[in-house]
Length: 328
Image 1 (cartoon, one colour):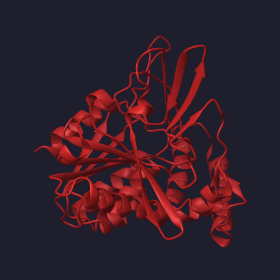
Image 2 (cartoon, rainbow, N blue to C red):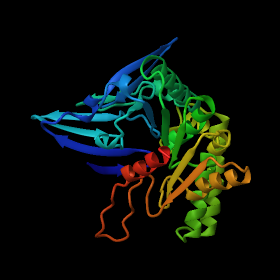
Image 3 (cartoon, rainbow, N blue to C red):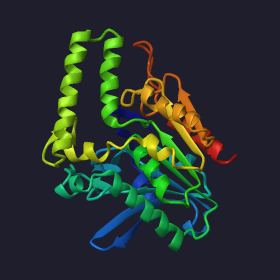
Image 4 (cartoon, helix red, strand yellow):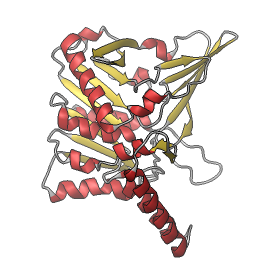
């Protein structure tokens, strides 16, 4: 398994094989039918799902990307995935669940996917939170009626979702808040500009101009949060919908929270995530475990310190530490 791209909130993993079962084929598809809507979710469980005792829900980051993009050619199957877990290392007594975004397929085979209008219309914090809440309720009602633990992990944009979800669904027992900002994403852009200035990458006059330009742009977004205008690869509507500071939701949660951030995260300023720890102390809340991983990036890969060094994928090592914490 090799990670070939690590972007703002996107992982891409690549596999090529000729005989073994493709990863996407190991998931079972289920749907929740609501008035005028269908939620599609996918479950991996090495055991019969009704025999499992725990639920492990992963909430991935931003963008309209299928979980798996498959190319079949001359008997060889190549699989590119935005799912960062090694399925063989997941706990056997948990059902591992992922939810497709609105109008985004779980898998594409030999074709390029382009997001339709309905994806952008439903790209919001409230909609994604509602999806996951409904899936948890459906699983408990129909498949795992008395789970011992319901563990949710949100990464990048998914961290905003898991924070909001924790205020709504009272069945969740543990929350993983990974590579997420404590402040509003708007403020994160300002922090990044100041970081550039502090590191000497830009001078102070340039920093001031970039800040003025940023706040002008944010004003435009809030004045007209539509789906036809894009900034930083997302619609104005998406930026508006995900501008809610995650720390405000996290402080409303009383179950155990495991917040993790890499010190070299290139998408989320660590200073923004540190706000969470400060606010939990200020509010005298004791349910936060806060972990900084030195030299890890946004996707928990090590950042090479010299040209001869290769990055190392540490996602599963973070996950293993997280599950040890869940088991305490």
